[in-house]
Length: 323
Image (cartoon, rainbow, N blue to C red; front, side, top):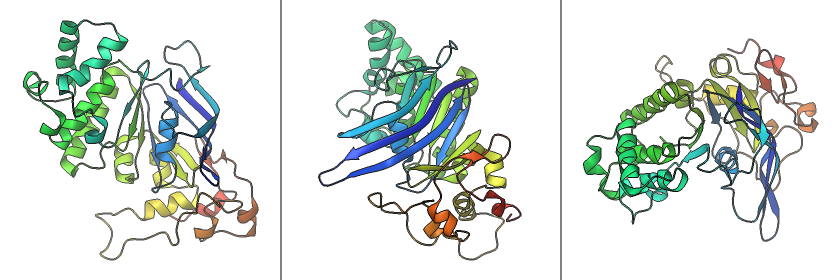
């Protein structure tokens, strides 16, 4: 059952001398209890897509497309991104030190949600706060609830961010690279926490990251973005095993591997396009080893590429046998 359906999401940002479209025709679904990853290089539109789903897009911007949500199983319906904040959808930011209010104690930060959205009194909200801190694995929650954010380690601050997000009992959690600034051991702990929360609460998660290894460990399905558009989508294990778009293939080949022979990692030649002047046709064509004239003039469209698979490549058969 689908909890979130995104169709042809488009974000236009007006600037002094021009307008850019960093998110263009983005389409994907999130199933109930499913973890969907969004991958891509920096500047691909991943984070802007995520923030647009909850009304956190930049100023002087216009959002269009169809956003449908079904939080309670009553059927999909259009929603206002601003109105769902704290009312079914919560957001976990990349850097908790800048997202958490430094003038509020940890316990007060977490208690805001239960008091504002559930009408709990001060004592009940405090009890709920301690319960949430315990649920996300913060040791000695009574003592740490009285601390300020700067007194906690990066891993504990991220757990506080997750507790804040969970404080309103969301059905959908949007995570914007929440493990990027953490060392590997703490990163693994946060990923394990998210998986446990999914199992215990049935929460759906959209997880944005440029780290394919993290996405491969965590996600059920994967959406690959490049230059503001979706290049490929499908079951994560299938996308990694047999990419149906040259960009996905190039990304996965650039991943470090313990099994690989010593040598330089594979790279993607060239640079992502300037958002003020995207090339015609496939936006990856200037960097693609398989591109021809048809690729440089073809309209972007996601097409079926097997069961549960979608690709924007006009000739996905070229990818067969490359692995």
